[in-house]
Image: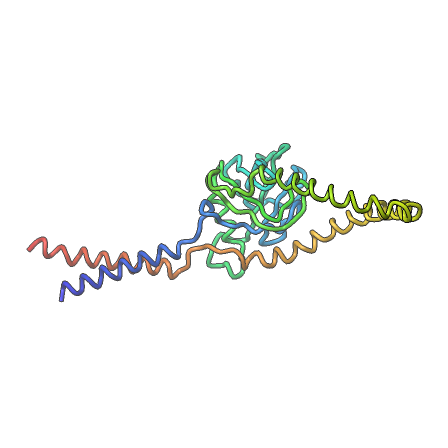
Length: 273
């Protein structure tokens, strides 16, 4: 009877420990994905934003956000220059962005994962606090040069774990291939036939009107569209986030500890005998 009880307790302990290992949330160094609603925008709720200047940092409402002060390694890779800075009601005075530096701000109104239904960015806030100096963030959907876009920032612990496609090398190769093929084919055919008849009408009128109007209209569209694309990103961000340690995970760990304690208590009388 005692042997069967011991076996049962050991089995329960092993199962509980295995299940607990599966429910442990992914930490920042395991590749946590932060949701970024936009660049140089105000923090208004459960937000994640990127700011590129000191002026924007001071005016974006960083008083209660977690500031990840980073330097730009490449177009979409950032490296933390300091440990995370938690806002305490005032704009952190130690943050002074220089050229080639940006700040990623993660905000939530709570640090308690039990309130995730009401404050869904709590997992991002807690993960941001776990990051350390020297860790990396890989941006997707964010254009730092144009200061536009909405997407994600994935935490990477070591440089060797950075995705290969995010390095500076792939940005050079695509610029060479498109420049060769289009330059040969279009240059031969249009130069023979269209050069005689449309040279008087088409070469003058189309070259003037399209060159002026699109140049003025294009900035208007690009400045408006990112704002519209940011709203869905902030609304979908809570659903994409994951993490936190659920209550039933702690329950499993507790059951495992109790089972192990029962095994130890049952073995003590045998040793004394």
